[in-house]
Image (tube, rainbow, N blue to C red; front, side, top):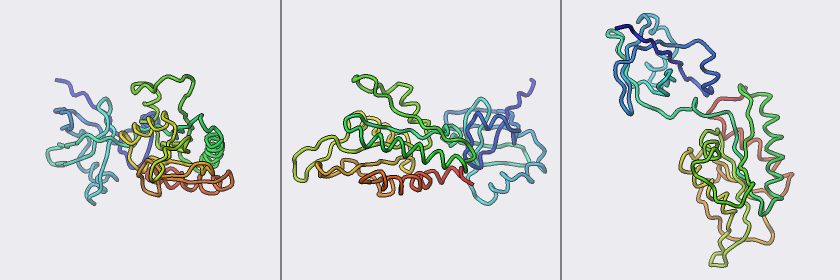
Length: 255
């Protein structure tokens, strides 16, 4: 039986799949068995060549070593045998499957805050892109109708695939209770709920414009580093870009 060699690319840092496949592969594999959460394969390179590779040195040092495998998805090495040429992988949700986008979840009920946020976020991305290995694009929610948000829509895929989800949670009303409860836009809340389900906490940033007419308790319990409060454009401009850059640190994008 002829061996069908699969290409595999080492994922040292964030790299979109469409960019990944344009560079030379790092390993050739012959798949032996594929399970729901694991893969067993033979590597086709010479053992001495594997020993000299950067990824194998990182594996020996105890680091997580991840590969994108052609036609199979993203996996981390769990064990490797240089003598038998066998290598064992476990399924991973890795960064290569994300797109170089920032998703802006805005609201229309108190448009002033979202308009400021959109303008300053685009300005921040223009500056960050001068230092980024890959150009970062801004994607947004769409508020074309008053209908409910569809959970199987392309909108939700954009949230799932983004590097960073940024939402405007400026309250649009409040519930008079003890203490008073601030209420963001219902559509924003729906999209935040989905983001909390499918993204890491460090990939979520909630921004809130202070309103003199509304005071109360915020409904989402996230760490302080995931929230940005601002009074006006000057304060937003001062803090937004630095916070976005911090949230994106794990992707090693900036030079």
